[in-house]
Length: 175
Image (cartoon, rainbow, N blue to C red; front, side, top):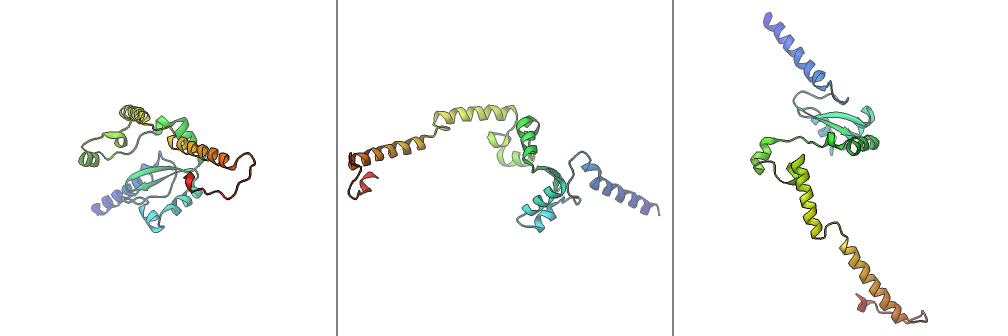
């Protein structure tokens, strides 16, 4: 009898934790199932974005859904996105890191993709500086196209002459 009471208490504690306690400090969202979260809801509606639009309508511009045991907070309202990521971007700049996977595959957190914080800023600043030296950020192709268009227009104007009328013009030599 004591075993059944203890099992009942443990089951109630388990459900209380998964349905209420772990979600208490997060924005509202769909109720996750223990261990798998809301993955079934997403999988039932391929490719999955219908769930996000439905949740956005039901819970508003910010909601929490669960991918397994991991909560994901989604912003779907433009003003909230602007406020969160532009005005207070430093507070939201971190990301979920799977340390074991990164250590196994990459040998640590190196490069621009896997880093964050001061190391990321330093590497980004260095990369942009080097890329600018190679012409990144300058629209060289647009300048070249405009130069070619100006030269072709000048040649056409010279062929047409002052009268503004010309016989049929063969455009092949201009390309």
